[in-house]
Image (cartoon, rainbow, N blue to C red):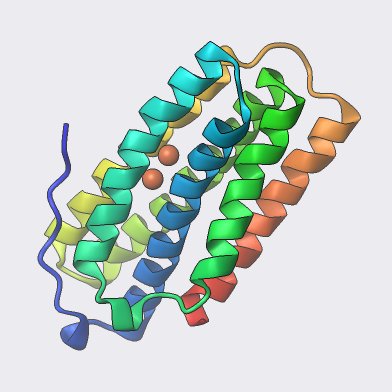
Length: 182
Ligand SMILES: [Fe+2]
Ligand SMILES: [Fe+2]
C-alpha cells in the first residue's frame, strides 16, 4: 500500500526532528543505492527479483522523505551516501546470494531500530501524529524486508560474513550520526 506524505513545517519543528528526518532521507537514499548495487552485479534470478521488489518500496520511501524535507535541509553528503549504499549492495552480490540476504537482514534490522527510536521520541515529545504514522508505515515495510531476507538466508554465517555484517552495522550507526549534522 502506498504511504502518504505527512504535512510537515520545517520552520516550526525542533532541530532534533529535522536531524532525524535528515538521517532518514540519507538512509532511504542509501537503501535505494543498496538495491541498485545488487542489481548492477547479481545475475541470480531470485536475488534480482528480491532486489527489484525492495527497490520499488525504497524509491517510494525516498520520495516521501523528499516531499517532507526541503532540499536545503537535506544532508550535504549525498555522494558518500550513494557510494556507500551501492557498495553495501554490490560487494555481497559479487560473493553470492547468502551474503546478499544476510546483509539485507542486518541493514533492515538496523533501520527498524532506527525508525523505532524516532517514533518513540515523536510519541513522547510532539503531537505530530501524521509524521509518526508515516514513519510507522515506512518501518513496517523495513520489517517486511528484514523478514523476507531472513527467510531466504541459509546456514550459519562464516567468520568473514560475520565481520562484514558487523562492519555494515557499525557503518550504519556512524552514518546516522554524520547525517544528523552534515
Ligand atoms: Fe526504506
Ligand atoms: Fe527497506
